[in-house]
Length: 287
Image (tube, rainbow, N blue to C red; front, side, top):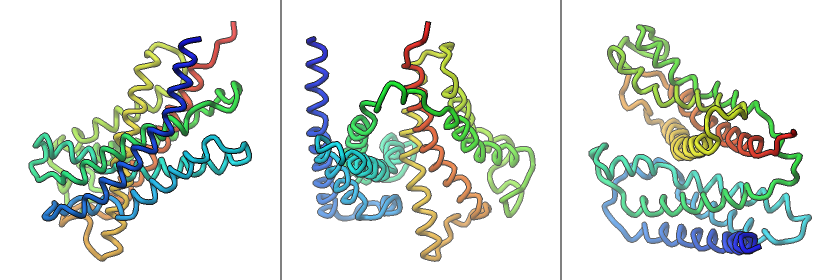
């Protein structure tokens, strides 16, 4: 009884906590304008208005959280829209952390780093609200094809990288433009792991611990979701403005579109696959 009451109290507190974080995102976004001489790299990750739209949609969904049942679909649509935009607002955070640790020896945009960190925290709480309480026990029989879709979407990057390492030149203006020797394959290792993880999320037999798979699935989804949308946005804005997104490199533009698009879609498929596995693996077994 005590655990149920504490869980209920936590559930009641989460919408308020999400609203506080959304307000903090707005405040951090406003304070960015007071800081001058910031690195220019952050401007390419998302449009200026994005955090404002994310907070507005998320707040509307939270306010309708305990509304009438007929508002359920509207609430979920607003909450999910706010969540997705909030994840996009957090895009670029992995690069900020790499700059912070000097693995990327460039300056850090501290105001935008604060905004992105708060946006990620808000996205986590919004995700808990959006994914809470399945409609019925029968809904735990979720589709398994999401994992296969994620597997396919994880392949373009490692396949092309391996092809280049073997001497192939599809998408290259000259041999070796993507690196010499087996260097291109090293960059493909994370995506080979992502492909393997995608397949592991399809069955529910427990030779891999359930909790480990869930941590890996949600972590990988969050990391890629904070890179894919920003990469697609940077590519689109560069093409619209007439700039060369390749930075003078020898890789064709369609390769960037293939890579960035597959990253963006993989995050969506991996999210669905992880959620599907979470529901299916938690379903009671019939003895």
